[in-house]
Length: 114
Image (cartoon, rainbow, N blue to C red; front, side, top):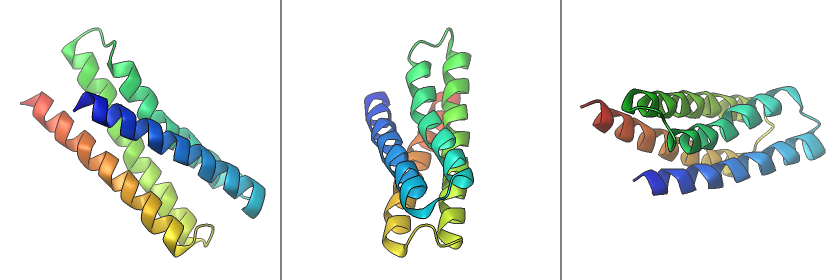
């Protein structure tokens, strides 16, 4: 499961960078998009960092941070949609990817804590 989540989070980070570039270039939106960029790319960074965790507790902690970042990213996506920076199609697809990542992380963290 670790490789799946690592790849999905990396692809999500790429998409986040592209959404950020789009929002800056086409919508002149810099504040919310910067928050989105930070949280959306942090998911994969924390998952990558978890691979070299010093202990099981550290591993779980890194994945918990990734989960928190996924939840935050979903917030920024919703806010950008509600303020009409993202259209319906952009929102639906991007938000669904965020939900998928969040569900995977919840599942992994729950199984590790058992």
